[in-house]
Length: 245
Image: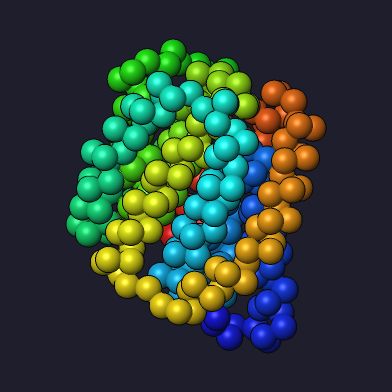
């Protein structure tokens, strides 16, 4: 853990980050990487922060998959996964070729523009081709900037997907995409004992987040869920933009 603050402050901050991000991920099906990654980067080197994020996100998806399996739209999930197989190598190529500053600026502006359209009630019809496209963009976002969520959130919000189906299908997709991404990370970037020890230390707070998130999910109605989605999308776009300024 990077010593940018005292050890005790670092431990407290780490526990809060994992607890809040886990609660958000469990209650909405998204948000762990959006909320956790910026703050984990305050405590860890980039490789460590990304891998801790991947490991704990996988734990959440594995823990919830049986509970939410009836909410998963397997038809959409199949095409999202197929599309991601195309997007994953494209994302790696983009990461290696394009300057990351300009890439993140373009992505942030695109997210903000599309979110504004959604708040103005712009809607699209779901289709097999669009499922593939959303999966492709999500795969590319995962291996280029480490955030698979925004393309799925924009797509599902644009098709007015029910919150149960959105959470279930997204968490099932994350089980796939994060597992593949973690393997790619370990093979090409390596890993360390510190990463796995820190991830293990975060597990009790993931468990608490799972319990709190499940309770919160049933208290959020569809309209509030949609507004929360927009807030997180705006947060993601603004964060990516300010990160490069």
